Length: 354
Image (cartoon, rainbow, N blue to C red; front, side):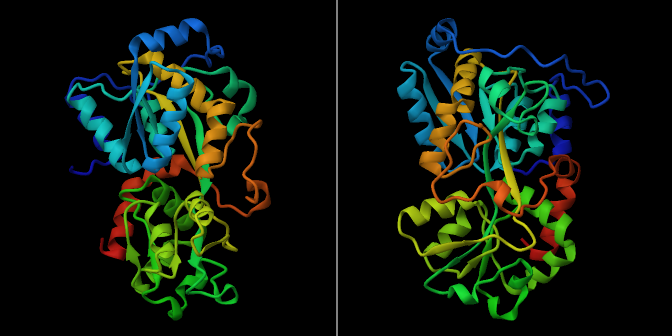
């Protein structure tokens, strides 16, 4: 699949005759009235009987979420379409360009995607009662088009069999020490939305010269943010530069010798929004899934089966996991990612040659 830039989405859709709103023309009504789950919605969803869920979360997690929903609402099946956030973004653009409307509900680890999708009129406005009541303003779109489905951090981590705690890096700058030459692994912003968001935050905090220096450390370069944790767990590399902390938590639960480092400069924070596509072929099933996934029950599934964090104020926290307020985090800036994603990819590639 040929990579598409953010601008290609607009050009591709326009060439296919799809009506897309430009920033100057985009207008939005006031946020819709919060909607509850009703017997009528359940019946309509069951009549449709299915929905397609495009997501960048790890496949085992997505499948557990899908099965939990299907158990709650028999008669509505969820087809999980899992890939890296950037690949899903490209796929949706190409499908729309071909007048293929297959995606009912989408979730991305790159929150900037939702800025583009909203601006281009590709998202349906649908506000659930639980989002309205229990989500802070910064974790939900004011026009009801998306909200944070999962929250996590991109963290440094290390293999405890290969690195002693007292020798472990404490900061991102520690990773530039010659002793880590050939021992580091990280994800790629051209594939992973998590790494795209993390790269933007790190560049804003540490400067691009940091990546120029890091690239000289002979870093193993992988695609997904889920890959570096698995490499250090297997002992193929000693330390990961970036990757989701929830994957590390899952590996720890299985007894893997991995430990998280919350960098002294701050850890990139990632919100993974979810929204319903305006072109959804199964809109009622999509609304029901959105209601459940963003509600207390669905969010608790995220915490319990995947060690993710939640913006829902009533969801019980994972035992032993520090709350974001207890940690130093970098500032997530989806608008900056949306505006500079192509530049971020180009600079990154120029340094790492991949």
